[in-house]
Amino acid sequence: MRVRFNNFILDTERRELLRGKEQISLRPKALDLLRILIENRPKAVAQEELYDRLWPKTFVGRANIHKIVHHIREALGDADQTIVRTVYGFGFSFAATAFDEEGIAPTTRWQLVIGDDEFDLHQGENVIGRERDASVRIDAPSISRRHARIVITSDRATLEDLGSKNGTMVRGRRTRLTELSDGDEILFGDVAAKLRAVRPARSTETIR
Image 1 (tube, rainbow, N blue to C red):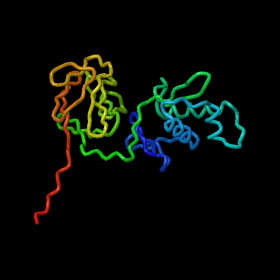
Image 2: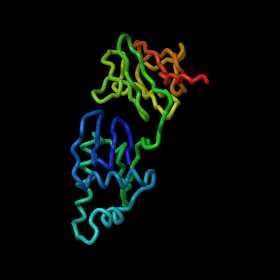
Image 3: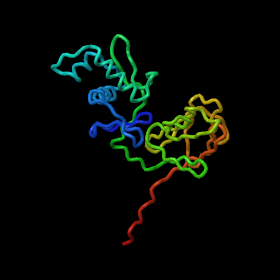
Image 4: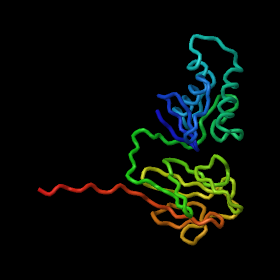
């Protein structure tokens, strides 16, 4: 299983968690717990089920699972529990939007062009903003920390403003949520950008 969420990729076959090209260190049980929650999303998983699956035939203290969840949240920067959510009195759930990358073969590759810079947009969520971990980092005064996001789903691109202070405009109109098209001109605060769809060239047919 290879799943993308926020700025992370979980690859269960390689047993690794990536943020971009950086490998994030997670303990083996933490990787297993994260995998279980993602496989069951959006359903919450009971603590008893997690214990049975993580420690079959082994007795461990009840505090262990909370330590593992804390370790996962620290690795993901998830202090506000937008990724791993506690369901009080029951267990935990995976709350982020996730995309299964296996079997996806989009025919279109998307880019965001800002000045002389070209940013490749990956399948799933691409956050635009000033924060260090943003998919498209724009260090400008008019840009909020998490200004907007572009979600790529196969051959579709959707833009959502994330409550930015200075707003987002598409085709000259302020917007909160809109589907994008090739060539759309976007204004994040006062930073101009253009969306580009890169489609594979058609192969030359043989004339017989």
